[in-house]
Length: 636
Image 1: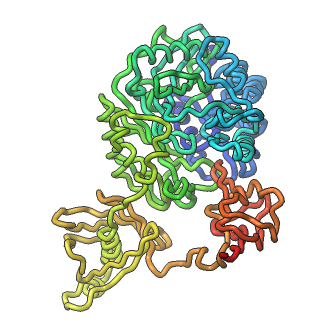
Image 2: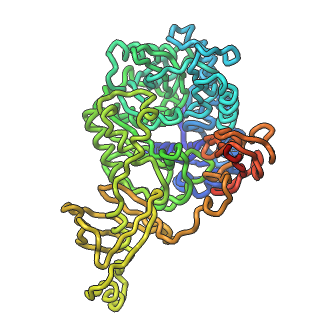
Image 3: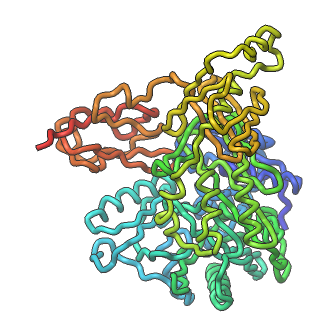
C-alpha cells in the first residue's frame, strides 16, 4: 500500500480544478503547473503550490514531461495525475514518472502503450475477438472506400480527424490531420477507416484495480459532436437493446483484461444504424464526460483512481446506477460562423444552482488563443432522461455569460430538439440541423430598449438634479439610442418610450422590467468595464449590444480582396508555392491558422491574383491582421 500526501496535476483548466477538489477532500496537498498565459488561471489560484513551465505553446509547456517531473520533485509532490489530453496517454511519460520515484495515477505504462496507438490497439482487439471496422490504406483507397475517416493514432478529442468524401481531397486532408495531431500530441501518425453515416458514438466506462477486479460502470452516448469533438453526453446511453448493452460491456471487459488494465478507462464503440457495434479505441485516462457516470453511480472516479493507485482493492461489484445524467460542454465559440473560437475577457459566468458545473474560469478571467475554448461542463441528474434534459436546458437558458460569444443557445436548442428529446441520436445531428439551430433569433428590440433605459437610469449616487433631469415630466421628442447586436442594427426611442406593445414598469442601471405584449419580463443588464458592450439577459434570450458609433470593423478599413485573420492565432502553413503574383481560384486554401488547438483554413475569396502576402509560417497574428490580398479577375 502507498500512502499519498501531495498530488501534482499535469494539466490545466477545468480538469485540474476538478481533480484538486477531490484531492483536498482526501486531505492531499495540491500542486499546479502552468504556462505563461496561464500564470493567473483558476487552476493555479486553486492549488496549494504552483510551478511555472516557461513558454506558451503546449509543446513547450504542458507536453514537456521532463519539466513536469522536475516541478513535482521540486514542490514535494509524491504523485502525478495527468488529467486528460496532453501527456495523459503517453507511456514514456508514465515510465519517467515512475522512474523518478513518483506514483502514477493511471494505468501501467504497458497498457497505455498497447492502447496509445489506435492502429496497434485494433490489432490487439481483433485478437481478443472484439468487432472492428477494417482499416483502409490511404495509398490504395478507391471511390468504393469513400467516405473515409482519418484519425490521429496517438490522441483523441476530435483533433487530427477529418472526413474525406472525395479522393482529390485525400492528400490535403492527410496533411492537415497529421499537422494537427503533431501539434496536439507530438505524434503525426494518422490512419484511415470507413466513415459510418448516421452512426452512434457509445462508450463504456471501466475501472480496474491491481487485484483482478474490473468494474463496468455503464454506457454513455456521445453522439452529438462538432468537428468530431463531443458537445452533449449522457449516461446511460438511451434506447440500447439489452443484448447490445451486454455485448458492449463484455467487449469492454475483454479489452481491459487483454492489457491487464488498472485505473479508470473508457472503451469507445461506433454503433451503426442497424445496431452493429465496432470498437473504435480505448482511452487510457479519465474522460471529459466522466461526471455523467459519477452522477448515475454516485461515485467519485478521481477518488477511486487515487485509491487504486495506492493499492486498494475495489469491492467485488460497483453500486447500482440510478436515474439519468446529461452533460453539455459550454464553449467560447460561434457555431454560426464555422464554430469560430472566441477570445477575450469573460466578464460573467453565472449558471443557476442545483446542478453541477465544472469550470476553469471565474468572472474576469481571460480566454486566450493557446488552448481549447471550453468554458465549462454543465451536468444535470434526474430520475428520468426527460427530467435531466429539461433541468439542463433550463439552467443553460437562465445562465448569464458576458463578454464572449458562446454555444449556449445552440445547446439549449439542441436539448429541446424533437430528435434529441426522442433519443434519436447519431453523429450527423449537427450536419442536418446546424442551420436551423443557429438561425431565427428572436427580435432583440425589447432587450435593446432595456439596455438604453439601464444606461439612462440614475444610479444610487446620482444627485437630485441629475435624477430630475433624467426623468423630467416635460413632454418632448423621445431620446434615441442605437446599437448593433450579432450584425443587426437596433434603434430604440425612450423618455418617453415609443415602441408599440412595450410599457416600462421599472428601471435601474442593472435591472429593467418591461411589459412586452402584455407579459411582464425582467431584463438583467450589465456593462463591461470599458463601456464598449452592454449585456442583456432575459427569458427572451441573451444579447450583447455595442453602442453606435463604435470602432470601425477591420473589414471597413481594407481594400477589396483583403484576407484578415478571423481570430488571434499562429500561421502553421502557407500553401506550397504561394507568393505575390500567384494565380488563385475561389475557395482555394491559402493559409492555415491554428487557434485553440484547431486548424482553420483561410480561403481565397475569389479567383484572381495574389497581390500581397503578409503571413509566414510560425507567425503570431492578432484578430483582424492583414494576411494577404487577392485581386479578383475581371468578369468576362
